[in-house]
Image (cartoon, protein in one colour):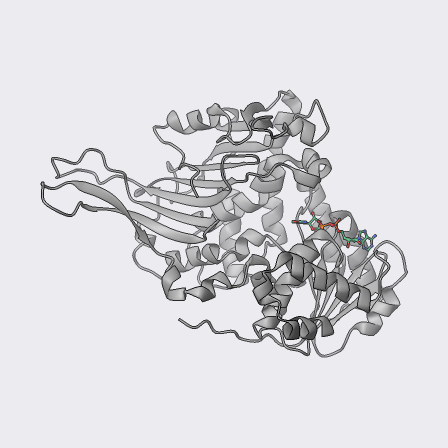
Length: 484
Ligand code: NAD
């Protein structure tokens, strides 16, 4: 199956923070891949803008090194790399000062799409928006892309939204959550809304429960100072897990259009019940297997910040009443795995004598590694010996049909940046969605901060605290095992 690459129109993209980690690791290699595939036309211009004092040639050298570091050599043919470097430029700029802004203005062209990627800390968002406006750099249809974290709580998220709203309309603001750019997340919407098979069963009557797991093997790495102020609830649940929950739980939108989809997601967030303290498990990793403890990693021996959360969430509406959503995420876990499991109910009556408690149907949506989807169905075990039942997975990823192209398919960042250029906000969070998500998480975090009790310990390389398993056991359920 040949994939069709539809080129986007010419654009000017400015990457504030163009010399930073995210730009070098994800944004620029992603842009290169879209360029190499013919999706970005040679008329496009990409301008790095950051504090680093380098010129165009210095930026091109930095980007060339980043491509070599973060992409396989087979993708870095000399000709493509040189052509890509040719569309790059650089302006040293101080987000909080006046230096560099007239130079940036001089680089922008009229009559092309303009996009500004804020790949800098959120404390600079306001300064950037204000200067883009004051120096008349951002034209009428300009778009800005803002990175997470979008606020620290409801109050700061509101303030951030208000600051951006002073200079840009909501339809110009692209709040990025790279989980929404993943192929399987979009495929989830295709499976739900382009088939008759699933939607009639997609409700409390037939779905026993849903699990959403985002497990990481890494610790806090170099982000210790930031992470210790945030914790798993702010860093992962409020944004990524919440977005996944919305896509599973939302009603069918009338059209696959930005506001139609985002209206439905918002309704889900607003339908979430407050979580009872007994329905949440917080954990913090302890040293094991040669890996340091969380407190050593963040250099805070008294830290009460959670590196793991598991919770039972209820969506209080007609569709989901009685069908819980279990969420869990953590660092330094046994495996790196992000997946959603939709567990259907067992058939109401078994007609088979030898039916020794086979599992119920299960739709597993894997986000990483090995993006894909499979559906477990129960069939007769082939061969003689009676009617023995066996569960087999139906692979729904069609990886073979997509063949080698699947390996080079655009990653989440690439896809989302191309959506920015196309002006499609469907996979970006709207301001009211982000605020609603904070309004739900704030009381949970506030209760923890008030009690000041320590998160439960779990060993590095484990599945989290024992209590997380108990959270499901007491409901007669169990987590999917963390095997990629
Ligand atoms: P970084 O510290 O590596 O890079 C920051 C960039 O901002 C540098 O290019 C620096 O020159 C520039 N900068 C800093 N102060 C400036 C100023 N006053 N004026 C102009 N430029 C200035 O940070 P990063 O890891 O690339 O992260 C950037 C943003 O993306 C942050 O908001 C971060 O939370 C978010 N983010 C990063 C990652 C990641 O994997 N690195 C993932 C998700 C979100």
